Structure formats: C-alpha cells, structure tokens
Length: 270
Image 1 (cartoon, rainbow, N blue to C red):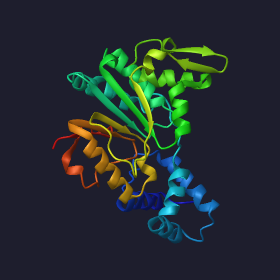
Image 2 (cartoon, helix red, strand yellow; image 1 turned 90 degrees about the vertical axis):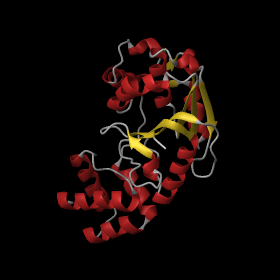
Image 3 (cartoon, rainbow, N blue to C red; image 1 turned 30 degrees about the vertical axis):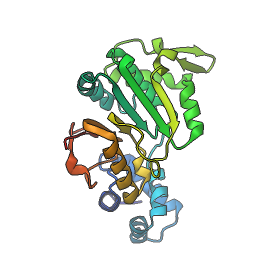
Image 4 (cartoon, rainbow, N blue to C red; image 1 turned 60 degrees about the horizontal axis):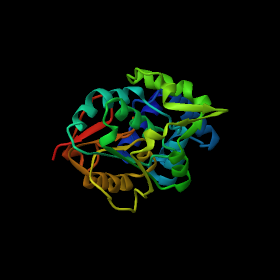
C-alpha cells in the first residue's frame, strides 16, 4: 500500500515533470488506484515505481490511464458548464458569429451539451461548433447523436446541476435502449478529423474546449498543442481544459489569465 506522503510525491512529480495537475483528484480514489498499479506491475520498492514514472514517458501513459476514469459524458463537471452558462456565453453573445472548437471531442457528448447551452441562451442560430478528433469512428458516432438510454439519468442530473431548467428528455427521442438527440441541435455542428499533434489551425475561434485530452500527452506535445490553440484563438477568446489539466507551465501562459479560480478556463489577454 502506498502511503499518503508517497501519493503527494507522485502528484508533485506529475505536475513538475509533465505538467499534469491531479492535485484536486479524489485522494482516496487516486491512492487506491496507485496502490493497485504498484501491485499489478510488481515493483520491488516505491523508489523504483517513482523512478519509472519520472523517467519513462511510455509508462506515464499507462499510469495516467490507470488512475483516471476515461469516460466522457454530457455536462461532465456540471460546475464547469455552469460557468459557461452564467459567465462565458454572455460575453460570446456580443460576437456576430460565435465559433467554438471542441478539440478531441470523442463521441460528442460535450458538443451536444454545448449545443443545448447555446440553444437555451438563444445563441445557437449564430454559432458554429467544430467537433474534431483523430479517430474517424468516434466522429461517426458523434455525428449520429445516438446515445444509450441508460446514461440519460446521469446526464439529466448533470444538466440540472449545471443550471438547466428544462426537462432534459425534451432534447431527445427514446427508442428501445437508445436515444437520438434532435436534429436541430446538430444544425450548427461540423465534424472533421484533425490531429492535434500534426495538423495546423483551420480557423479562428472565440472558445476552444479540449478537456481530458492533454493528460495523455507529454510536456513537449502539450506545448505544441498549446501553441496551436494560441494561434487559433482570437484575442480575448477562452480556452477550456479538463479538470486535471493546466496551462500554468506552458510557455504561452503569460498570454492568458485564468477566468475562474475553480474551473480550468483561461482568457487570452495578449
């Protein structure tokens, strides 16, 4: 079993060496998963476990996959969406055309969440939502807008916690074990394959969301992606990352001011 002090050392290493911020992660959960990985990979000592993590970027990927729950969902982190709803959309509303990029959108649950926010703010008609991912098969699922019915209870709770006032089921039609979200939510979505590591910018945006993607990149790749986002973001635009990700150690960090102390949203100030 890894001690609390050893958990602190590993979390500090992740932040210092790779820029991955897991400090707000559930301590009991992360301690349990670290201990499980330590046992699974049969490290003879904690010192060797820590050395492997600090010096082997391939092992870092395994480590991150093991200690995180990689499940996308609608209105994931409801407080994040509440900030979007109450603080960010009113600023975006001042633009004649709102361009939003969901980078690494996976199966699209967060893109539909954004479409619902924009629809409720009466902004969807003048918005464009670019949804990109390196994997064409997940993009195909995203473009269909069909999700398991079993997930709707959790999504509805997330939606309400984010400040949603309507009946969440009014946004989809259920059939057998699946639901299909209404076509009007998709009218402003553009799905395309895009490799964050090698592809260039393709537009200029007021808001870029890339949540829980960068945790799988090493620091060099993160820097390249941050440069891509910086180049793709209008002045005074917003960059939103996942709850365990940070812009703090990036070379572009001085160009940004964190909008919210609790949510990982930065505004481009220069």
